[in-house]
Image (cartoon, rainbow, N blue to C red; front, top):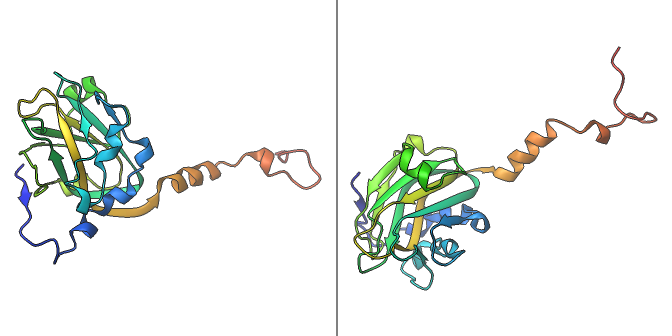
Length: 202
């Protein structure tokens, strides 16, 4: 799918507000497969204004450009488009494949399963490109897995920024889990006064 390019001055247009889904990422639970530095995947999620900050990056192991990035959210979200700022010298990812609401995607799954959507990427060193999603398919997203199978010929793949444009449904994931739990109460916690447990059924 073709990418979109910014056609306005971000100083006059609230780009930061549009790319605010990073605030709903459960960063502590982000992980990546084949990352050269464990935990570095967390550093690619930052505010729009910091997208060109190269101090933190996710890099694959040398001579193995493939990466998988798992992104869980604190609320369900709707994703409109994705921005990826990659590295120089051929290290930017050249393809991206997306899976939603799966927590078990590994490289074998990513290669064999049909993604919700995939994109051919351009080298986006200045954060000017965004890749629209098939928006109706990206509703109620609890987690997003991105598979980057190839790059532009570098010995490793490097990603400095992943931005997500969209909106939160404001449905808190922990609140939903607790609500489901409370729908099936523990009878020992709801004893009848003076009784020893659940009432007998005649």
